Image 1 (cartoon, rainbow, N blue to C red):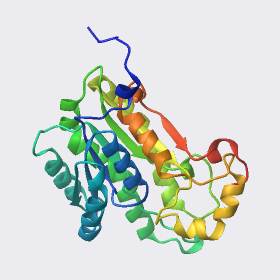
Image 2: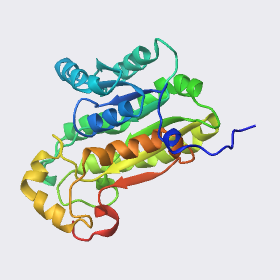
Image 3: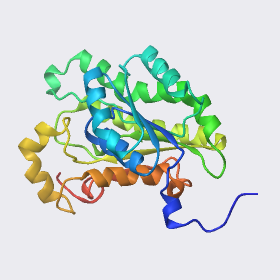
Image 4: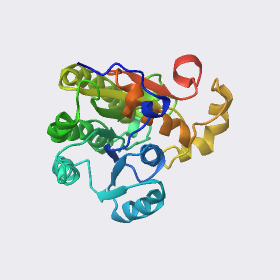
Length: 267
């Protein structure tokens, strides 16, 4: 029988004993998420393409908990499988997979190149699928009916509303990721694995830097909450989805954007 006792507040958000993988975890939203999971007690592996960035991020995050960084080029199928093998080599299980690694390409319609589709879709849409595929045995091993394993895909509000900038492949890839989240949620739910997506709005990051420099004030002015996202905003939703508090959610897309995509007009 399932344990139906009341869970304490601390237990709702406690990730002690959990192992999480956060791709693209060396900067921006990925680092925000990694820090939150570490502070909640999880052991976290982060990855990104560049070895020096991995080493630097591991050093910065080590003050918050047990973190390991592994360089991997996740736009390649074989690299996804290599990373999956390394992450699960010790225990053969993984409690939380956060598919955050991503790329963006801005260019006008008339000159938008073929490589802008290949590069962006490989990393933003194919890579999350490849990692779920490669890590499925480890997620199955970790999940139970009362405490499922978790997949958290990082989408975008660019897939919820139409942004002004010419991000054709980026917006399309994130919309595809939102739908892939729902498809996988339906299939993997009976296997004790939840699959949800977070759709971030404007957070300070390298990817958003040029946009915020040019129109950041206008974005803030039109956002219902009148500010940009903060580190804790992203860390909080990740801990929620990874912990007991989020164990009955699957197939959801959660905008974390201060209300921009769902309530604001003309943004």
